[in-house]
Length: 327
Image (cartoon, rainbow, N blue to C red; front, side, top):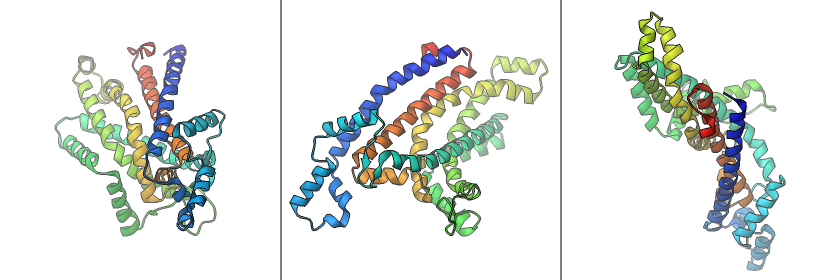
């Protein structure tokens, strides 16, 4: 695949992302302005319950929430272009610092869960597709449909009950042990098992079913039948021919699963008290924290656009019939 075509595709998608992000951030400020939540009360907490109107008005002016949302959006956008994402009123920190402290842990959680879901889904899908209608195929497919219908927070609570409370083999929450004074790789890995496993299980059915259908269809195609007729081994036919064709639909699935992966990660982080961006997102939404809410929404939108771009690049890399210049 020519690198020039890849660069042109990335450039086109980057230009397309600019108006999308502008519309998204504008919508965030518009929706937040129409929210019934009062950012002044969220900022002051119980301290403003007995405050007079003059004090509330002064605080509202200092926070800038008495201005039209278009003005606030324009000021935030101008600052964002220079790298200043503003100050989070509810967390009393710069927005960039809030995101920087939490994003690495959310990224770690999502990356591990997504990798496990792709690898496990591919293995289960291939296993089920080898003999359609067999006991293995029916078991894998039925399990995938059951997991597909199960809410991620229900899976998370069940995992906590089973592995943390009943068996006591894994920690239920947090990033490190309670008595630990420093973050170590071993503790993080141990605490990551449950949240990453739950998030992976929530994504697993889609990859399993897509791989199963794709590989089963590929095994029925003439080129694969011809490979078998030439005496090639079953393993070579399956891995060298059917799997490559069967994985093509999965590549398009990667981009479409990113939004649900982000949503699932927020729920999983909340259940397991994982120190990612979930808590910051909830607080930003309920407190109508305009700068933080806009930054988090922009970040989520950029992740979705990047996921779609990655899926298209992988599709062009694996399938020589696809022309990236036509995308």
